[in-house]
Amino acid sequence: MFQAIGGCASIVIVRAIIRDTTDGPGSTRAMAYLGMALGVTPAVAPLIGGQLEVAFGWQASFLATAALSAVVIVATFFTLQETLPRDKRRATRVGDLVRTYWRLVRMPVFVGYSLSVGFNGAAFQAFIAGAPVAFIVVMGVPTEALGLYILAVPTAYVSGNFIASRLSYRVVRQTMIWIGCGLTITGTMLLVALSLAGLDTPFTIMAPLAIYSCGSGFVVPNALAGSITIVEPAHAGSAAALSGFAQMGCGFLSTVIVAALVQTSFLQLGAVMAACVIAATLCFVALVVRHSD
Image 1: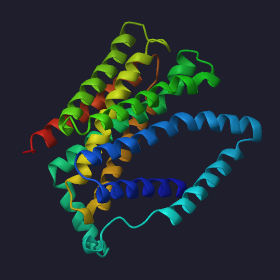
Image 2 (image 1 turned 135 degrees about the vertical axis):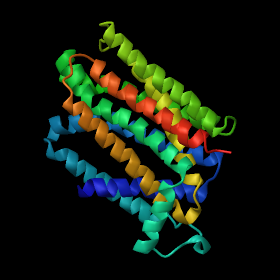
Image 3 (image 1 turned 90 degrees about the horizontal axis):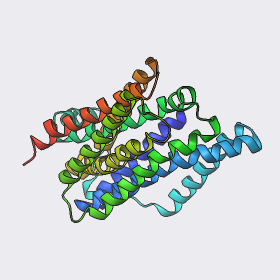
């Protein structure tokens, strides 16, 4: 629990730092690079953790995490300076925080961007929760090979983030989100169609998952940048926290739904993922596009 609190706090602070130091297309590029880092780690960590457990026992993963955290603390202490200018800082009071959050939830564009990120994250969390059952129990994939199949999703997500970062100065933010929404819906609907046709095998679902993940790599950095840059710098931390809360909350709900389903194929998981990305698109259209100038 304490590890999760620290991890979430770090993500919020990093997003606020991006708001302090970049703007416009630059913030999209920075969020894309952050997304690439967040996409690589879920792919690499299980592979490293598995090797550590085999070589040194299950406790080794916790020791390795502690060692990495210590390195981050030292690096932060010696290299990271305050990024918010002194004239833009505000004293932190509980009442002011409550009023800031209340103002943010009444901003349609901010809410739309945040929910777009949240529901895209919910689709990924649904995949993480349901993939072991779908691959190992339903499809008979060996346990030791699961990480290799899951690797396709973060790899495509990193690719989407990289492409978005390259296009950030040439393609407007909303256009890239439109492209991403189209890819995520296409990929998840293909998952459903293949399952209904009885063609959901470990190999045939890789392409639809890659299409979804690449599209999510377009949506998430652009929507995150949009949610942070529309608020004044002094409230960037609150905006990042509220957006992160939406992301984790949506992921929690999708995980609970997947856990409650009886998986007989990839259909159930694909349907949840499709519902999540459709909800993300609807939030973008209804709250961002409709209320943007």
